[in-house]
Amino acid sequence: MARRRRNWTGRFLHSVVPAAAAILTLFAGFAPLDGFAVERVVAANKAATAPATAPAPSADAEKREPKSAQRGEVQGYYVESRSCQVFTGPCFANAEMALTGKDAVMAWGIVAGRFNGVDLSGLNVVMVVRASETLGFGGLDAPESIKSLVIVDERATPVQREALVAFAQKQTGKAGRSIVRMEALPIEVSVDPGTLVGKVKAGSWVNVLTRKARPNDCICTNEVAYYPPLTALKHFAAGVCTEAEFRGRGLGNRWSLPNSRSAYLGEFNL
Image 1 (cartoon, rainbow, N blue to C red):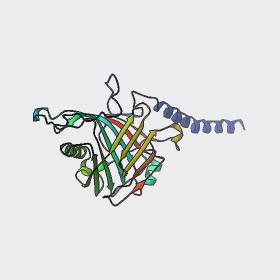
Image 2: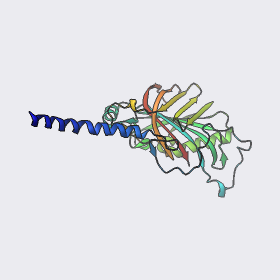
Image 3: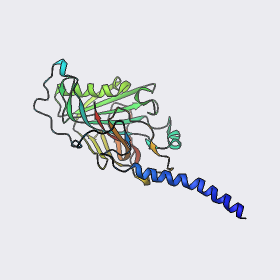
Image 4: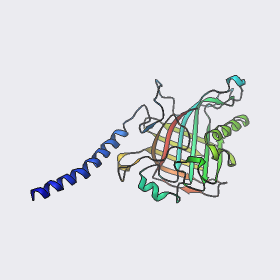
């Protein structure tokens, strides 16, 4: 009897201790680290966080720089939503593979910077993607076929709209080379880097609202930022979409996936 009790105790500890360690690790993972808590591409080197809401476009936004000065940085905030879970474990990801995750919204809120010599400070751009397969580890270049539409900030001048489209194309590989439609709509993109609350609103076409992932969002305790973001980011963290929908035209598909672990929020410095 004593031997059986010891064996049962050993099995209990063998199963419970790793789970408890995973839960403690999860709680630790959500402690704030200069705004983005879960994943970092490079270490932060700023003394303070940039404003989360982009300022209004400058008066000389349309002026161009000489070629020698056209390689300036573009900085801002990014929100991504997909039609599959990204903060998840392999069991859930495998169950969704080839069935969901073929759609995505990608939004850049540009705080400051120039692209192709055009000042884009305070402007926003959104790309919506529809692919033939799940947008997984291979990102935007893996699907056999893919198409996209770009929504530019209606406040932008014609020159700025052209630069916004080119900026989005450069960040999105095959999807950027497969644009089937461009629209100009009122766009709002905002990220609170402390609370990881993000918002994207593009007319009546796109509506995304995110929050920080919490320990009670975990189901199997194996959750991680499973698939990488669809574009290069300086810092990023996975989150939960409380609202996520695309109601536009041009891609042959409309979708809505609220209350899903399908968001990425980040900062870019390109």
